[in-house]
Length: 121
Length: 106
Image (tube, rainbow over all chains, first blue to last red):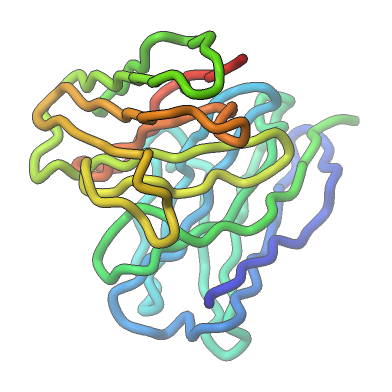
């Protein structure tokens, strides 16, 4: 059973870069056919997909965030990361990493617990 | 971008009743690439249904999904106390978007 765990600072200053890592256990991030995703949820609001990475390094981002987002993968550490630059208060959210159990699909069986990131000076 | 509109925003029901949740898409979601999730406070979403009508592993058969094209439905045949939560639909046909959610409350 794949398990995901987000880690990173809970507080980021405006205009700085938000950086989070998702550690994958119980399965290899290099397994073909699986996408490794970041999703966020603003306080009291719905879900917003940020983007995904494949183990090869190919990525796909939400067009609304694409100019500020970089998702990277470290197969040697079995983890992937999110960087969101030039953050504002509107980026305050719970950030989840997620993946699926079926190859070549983008529905998510496995989620991390989520980590709250607050953007504030 | 495919916009998903969920209705109603809130559904007030009692245990044992049937819940019918709707998800409308602004464009056709071909191949029925639509999923449903349940989320309880403080927890990550839980996958219930994928490909519009397939139950995820371990999901009770009181949950069922149907629909195609632009209109999809999640039905909970008999509400159990643990089913009171927020439900989201998600399409993964073109990029990936979520609906705004339906809260099922007692």
